[in-house]
Image 1 (cartoon, rainbow, N blue to C red):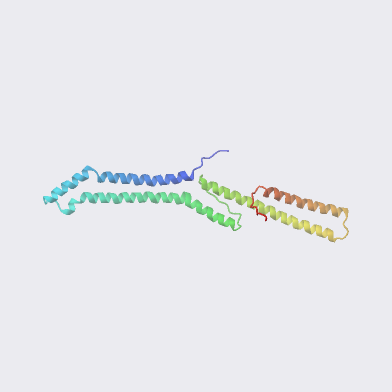
Image 2: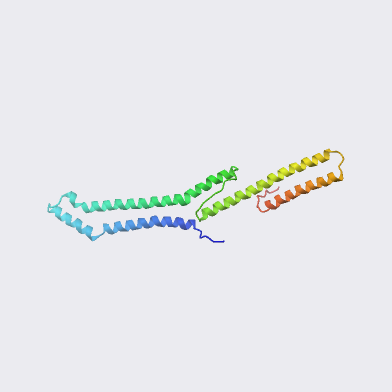
Length: 206
C-alpha cells in the first residue's frame, strides 16, 4: 500500500501565521529604514533652508514626508492584502472542511447513516473525517444486525407459538422448535461478538 505524506494541521496554521508575520516585518523594516534614511533627513533640512530663504513654499517643504506617508499607506495595503489571502486559505483548508464535518455529523446524529464525510486534505481533519465515517459504518452494522435479529426473532416466536398451539407436540415439531431456537441463539451470539468490540458506560450498582 502506497503511503501518502500527511500534512500537519499545526504546521499549516504556523505557516499561515509566519506568512503574516513575515509580511508585516518586511513592510515595517522597509518603512523604518526609509524614515531613518539620511536622504530623507538631508532633503528635509534642505527644504527648511530653502523655506527660510523664501525659495520654497510650506507645502513643498513637507513633500518628502507626504511621500513617506503614501509609502506607509501602500505598506498597510500590502499587509491587509496578505492577511486576506491567508484568511481565504484558512477558510478553504480548515474552516470549510470543519463546517462540512459539523453538518454531516449533525445529519448522522439525527439518524441519517447514509451520509459520509469527504475531505481531500491530508491533515488531521481528514483523519477525523475518516474516524467519523468508520464510526457511522459501525453504527450501521449494529443497526442492521439488530434489525435482522429482531426480524428473525419475531419469525422464530411466531413459529414456536404455532407449533405449541397445534396441540400435541410431535418429535418433528420439537426438532423444528430446537432449530428455530438455535438460529435465534446464533443471531444473539453474532450480535454479542460484534458489540463486545465496543467499550460501553457501566452504571454503578448500589
